Length: 247
Image (tube, rainbow, N blue to C red; front, side):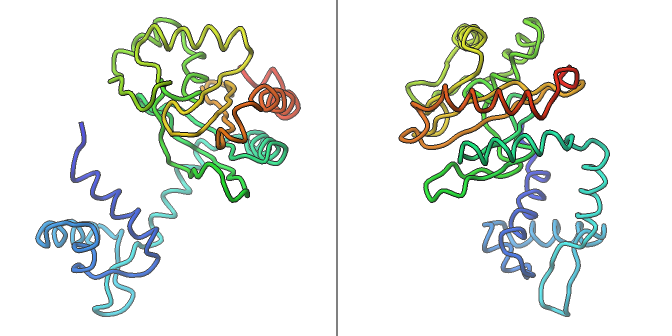
C-alpha cells in the first residue's frame, strides 16, 4: 500500500537532488504535476519542521543540511563494513562492470552501495534502486540465506509480475533457481527484470545481516562471461571477507 503523502515527501527530495537549486512553489507544482494547494501545504509543513528553507527572499525553497545530518547519523549507526566497500571496488575493477551490494526491503532488494562501470554501455544503477527479490540474481542470493519457512513468508507477499520471458513466475520456479544456484556455486540472471541485462550474484552474509553482491552488465558483453565473472567474485570474496566474518 502506497501512502501518498509519504511518497510525495520522498519525491520532493529526489526532485531537489536532480534540480540542485531552489524551486518556487509554482515550479515544484508544475514540475511534479501536483495541485498548487497540496504543494503549498506539503512544502509549508516541511519548512516549518526545519527541513526546507529559503536561501534568498522569494527565490524558492531548498533542503536544509538537516537532511545530511540525519542521513549520516542513520548510516553511522549501521554502516557497511569497510571490507564490503573494498570488495565491491575490487570486483568492479576486475570485471569492468557495475557492482552493487543489496539488502532485502520487503519483497524487493535495495542497493546500499554501487560502483558503476565506466564503460559507455553499462548498467546504470544508484544507491536506493530496487529490484524484485524473485526476478533478480541479487534477490535470490539473499533468499538463499533464509530458511525454507522464512522464504515462504516472503513468497506470500510477492505479487509475481512477468517482465520478460525469463522472469520466474512462481514459488516453485524461484526455488528451482535456488537449487540450481547451489549446485553451480553462484546465482545468475538474464533479462528477468531489465531487458538485455545479465547478472551474477553471491550471497554476502556479514554478521547478522543478509546481504548480496551483484555484477551486472549488457547481455552482449556479460552473458557468456558469467562463469568467469563468478570466479572473479569468489576469489575477491575469499580475500576481502574472511569466512569467519561471513556468519
